[in-house]
Amino acid sequence: MINFKYPFNIIFALVPVFGLTLLILAYHKKERILNLMKINFVIPLKVLRGVLITLGLCLIVLSLMGPQRFMGYTEVSRKGMDIYVLVDTSKSMLVEDIQPNRISRAKKIIEGIIDKLQGDRIGFIPFSQDAYVQMPLTDDYQLARMFLDVIDTDMIAGGGTNIASAIKLADSSFKRVTSADRVIIVISDGEELDYNSQEVVKSINDKNLKLFTIGIGSEKGGLIPVYDEKGTQRTGYKKDNTGNFVTSRLNTDILKKLAESGNGKYYQASLSGGEIQSLLGDMRGLRRDTSKIDKIKRYNHLYQYFLGMGILLFTAAYLLPERRRTA
Image (cartoon, rainbow, N blue to C red; front, side):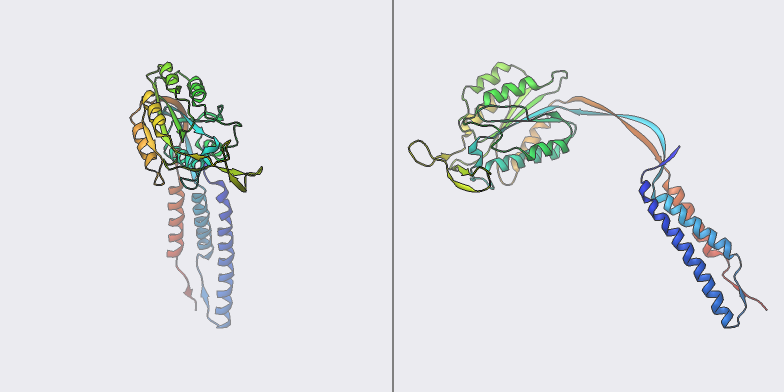
């Protein structure tokens, strides 16, 4: 059975109709001119020529519609692993010591990771004082980008950064039905992280679990901006109980120890995005398993036959005798 890949291209069917109309008008005009000049010409096979040109145009239009024959299904297996990205959404992620700010740079890193995934499933867990699964594991990367867009520092109320609960939540959310490695990526400035959270990773005791950390910010740090209720206008900077401005700095030590405890590696965020390539390169060597088998329809494309026949009819019409003079 033949169907069409681009059925909406039938709009081009107006072309042969328009072409046939022009052809008929041209023949009538030519005959009128010859009659006025009192030249007796006959145009042999003019009806056949018109038919050939029209059929040729119709066949070309059919070729533009992508005719194809369904040949059955082909099974395609995808190999991948599960990845949970833990995003620090505490207020310190608003610091602008890395442009435009830490949280925006974190989202840019995640977007770069998503762009390179093929078959892997990814999920998001924002955390600060608490943590929750914002997006469960999925291989729908377009959906992942939509969830990524809405991540901000207002998602979880309260202060502090409870990385321990986020790691436990990620570990319990993985599905252990495959032998593939499982990956946790923590993106944070490292401030106020629970130092004993390393024991959380050790208690998991899973050789297939890899924990990578990405540090956002600088050792020099910066002030934490405070915004109005709408979150659009900056009203000042955060102060401590004594009235002094609070400076937030990147804490690389705990992030490095966290990655080491989780059989992973630490990366420093940069404007060039080199940490994304380094992370993806290290993840490339991890074990993946067949995660999904898709049935893909298989077609035999036929457009070339319609196109070739259309061109052939055009050529035949062109080679027909144009006219001859009568006595």
